[in-house]
Length: 153
Image (tube, rainbow, N blue to C red; front, top):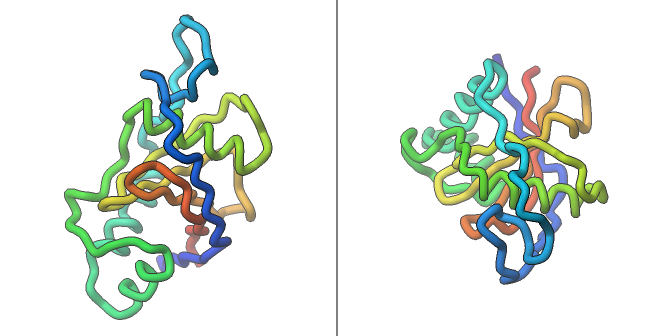
């Protein structure tokens, strides 16, 4: 299977240095009730994507290096590429995606990937094209950097 990585846009959205509370929400954005889980668990599809990311981020061939460069990702080891379930990161990513996609308080759930020093978030409710996963990329401080399409052909 050949995996394609496509640059969908290069918009930098930085929500600044606003503090986020212990749930990952901006101040004054919640109540004391327990919020539903935002992180999605691993699935067959997400494990396939993880394999694609491991290839992209650990191989030194010129094609992988060029793709990493386009997306601002660094060469790393397989142990630095993973599915993560840190609720705070998922909540932050969902909040940013709601802002980007103009869908406030959507109840969005996300699948989060550790990509070396960066992160990627996929929202199963958002897809540009059938069969193509859209991964929203974040830097190490969880500021949105760009999105990429990940799909097989």
